[in-house]
Structure formats: structure tokens, C-alpha cells
Picture 1 (cartoon, rainbow, N blue to C red):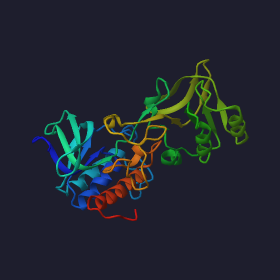
Picture 2 (picture 1 turned 45 degrees about the horizontal axis):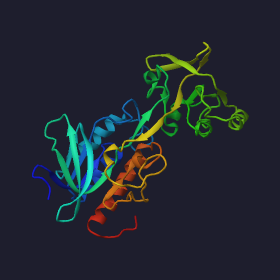
Picture 3 (picture 1 turned 90 degrees about the vertical axis):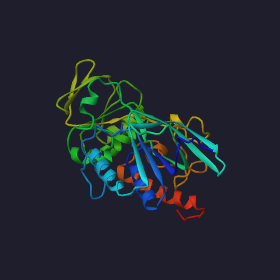
Picture 4 (picture 1 turned 30 degrees about the horizontal axis):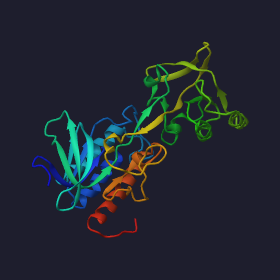
Length: 317
């Protein structure tokens, strides 16, 4: 049995981004009781505009979250816990079947110490680490971005930078070259681009700059140049950075889940993990960030499958 102070619901959703919010909407409409735990620290908080979301192209990410929460307020069976985090998740035999116990902490009033649920949807997204460049954060989300599909349209035909130290940097450069023929790849002193890749990029008109970066120059979020350690300035009018991403899954340490080489959760095409009753949607089950509309779609799909699984009905999802 659970403790008397433990809230009991059908589903706990961990994460209040597009995947978690979309899942909450669809679960709410299916009359499932839901608690959504939202730490309130979205990875895309620095982004002024999000793109590629049908009917909401160009909407600020925070506004999209606000609109979603307003829609969820129509469903009394969906409860959102703001500024709260799941510190640990455990499976337990509660007499009426296996349940997940999510231990909670947070600064806001009214947060229960724990929530007991028949199922859990993990939608915690990713943490990102940017290259160590002093002023990078001052331009990030304004004229320097990480998602080409999201933001390259606004930077098309300009002289751009691609900054990164990851093995996929050359592949990322070939993608960004769809939007500009004036691209410089900065490896920041790393060996992220090998000599064969450099020759291939050069054949496409893409310059590889291997010297370390001292800093970025510009004013009020408008980047204007990359300054190298020897004082050389390379003028740009925007750019992209390749962060390193890490799954935010520390609270799952007590559950033996299958993970991929990057530490992300392994799921089937419907969001089921290797543990029955535990699902994932969005970036937590992906080696890199997805567009908002893709994450929202995964949340909706996982919610539909979860409802069918709760009642023991197999689906074609």
C-alpha cells in the first residue's frame, strides 16, 4: 500500500515541454487522472521564436507553453505541479498491482511528497553543454542557434558560422549549406573535422577554420564576428553552434531500463520502454533535440498507446 500522503493517479508525466503537454492533453481527454511535474527550466528558454509548428510558426516557445496550459485548464483530471522535480522513481507492489512511486521536491506550495501512478511518461528532454566561448550565451537564441531546421530560414544567404567540437560537425555543415554559400566551420582547436571531410567541404565552398576561438563580437544579441586567439576577426551575420546533449534522467537510477550508447531511453515506435508501464516521448528518447511539433506528436502518440495499454487493448500504433 502507498502512504496516506501519497497522491494516486493513473499517469505521472515528468516534463512540461511540448511532448509532456501534448501527452497530458490527450490523456486528459481520455479521462485518465494525470499529474504533470514541470521543473520550469525549458532548454529552449533562450529562444525568442520557434518555427515549424503548424499554425504557430514564429511563436515564442514560452507563449506556446502558455497556450497549452490554458487548454489543459479545461480538464480537471489533469494537475500541473510547477517548479517541482521528480527526485527518484521506484516500482512497488501495492496490492492492487505494480505501481510507480515518484518522490517529489519543489519550492511551490501544495506539492505532495510523492505521487503513485499506474504508468509514467518520461518527457524530460535534454541538457545541453555549449562550447566554452565567453560571450556565446549573449547571442544564443537571437542570432546564434542550434537547430538549422528551426532557424536557418531567417539567416539564409548571409555569411554564417558553424561552431562545434562534435564528430558530426561536417555533416551539420553540409546541412546548413542549404541556406547559405558563405559558411565557415570553426572547430575551436578540436579535431572534429578530419582532413578528408575538410577537403569535401572545401569542394562545396565551405571553409574550415581550426584555430581556437577567443570570443564572439557583436551588440545586443546581434553577432558580428568570430575573434580567434591570434586576434584574427572573421565577420559573420549569424551562425549555429553544435552543443553536446545529455539526457536528464538522473531520477531513473533505481530502475533497470535499456538505454542507447548516448544514455537515452530505448523505446519502440510507440514510446514503450523496456519496463512495462514506463513510456518516453520527445528528446529523452532521442540522441538530439527534435522540433517542437515532432516532440508534441510523439507525446500524443505515446498517450494513445498508454491508454490502450491501461485497459489491456492492443493497438496498431
